[in-house]
Length: 244
Image (cartoon, rainbow, N blue to C red; front, top):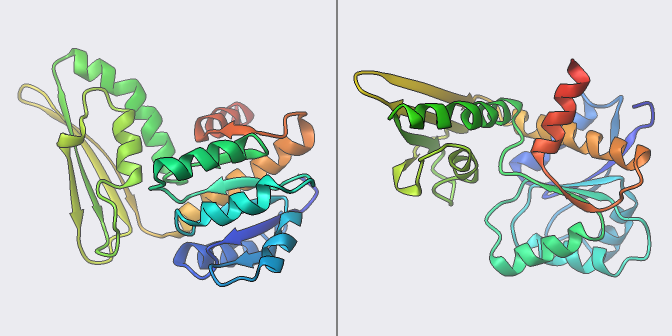
């Protein structure tokens, strides 16, 4: 993409917001620029100015969708695409996200790591085969002590891709400063198969979110569709087709 994509970070004071800004100023400097950095204390005028960005990347808190919705829903201008890494929205906030997806392209994901996405695809392929052979799955997911949700959004996403893995067979551990480990075990008769992913840097999530943001910006410039709920599966399939 020759044209530089303008980015707004929502949740700019958090760990993910700072990681995004670091990558935009360094590794991604040739392809995108930071035009707005919003946080909970930002003035309304700053939120209005941020509507000029090509893409918003939100790693804030679930309640931020209330303010985003109020600015987007009444704007007559062409809206930025939304990349949302925040999870844990209650039903009322999820309904607001659905409304926003009717105004612009929106992609929400619990984990933007390329490795986790590849693991999800592997689980979709292998778990039905193993289930048919009598293997039973379980998951152990470990995160830092500050993480509030258990199981994590990533664990639930991976579980949804794994045949026979119920929430009762997900074991959540919160210890130390672990960024994120997910291990899925398949137990058969006298044998065990293990698939796992270990995050060693938060930059993998920020890098993945920026990759998605650039992809959405390119879609919006080359395709007629300007709204709709987009998924990481869409991103993954197109990325694979481009790499063949």
